[in-house]
Length: 149
Image (cartoon, rainbow, N blue to C red; front, side):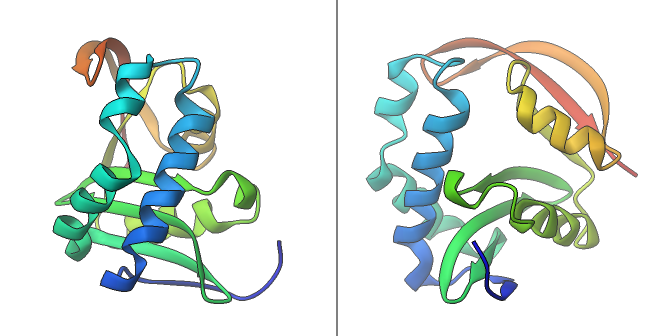
């Protein structure tokens, strides 16, 4: 995947693409971690509704006019960073993470068993500060908390 990558604020016209990227990313990264109840509660329509209400906290990685990844930051917490599986390894996730850090992101949460995401963050200097279990849609899951700064 080549082309010019731009990091920019999310816009209303991006909502359908954000939902598509989130759905594809959730399924690729979480299928072995969460149950079907998670996916039933995180449909593209539900995601689109959530993203419409959160656009002011979202940034996208746009490659040649197509959204390939996005992030959502609340205060200093990185709530989401998802890359379309077809765009993984292209630098979009790293660019969004650097953007989130520059905008003040200092903490994030991951599923404990999302090894690829954890390795991604650790390579970029994020440090594990605690492990715990918490209720996530569809059940209780092991999670980890990272901080940077």
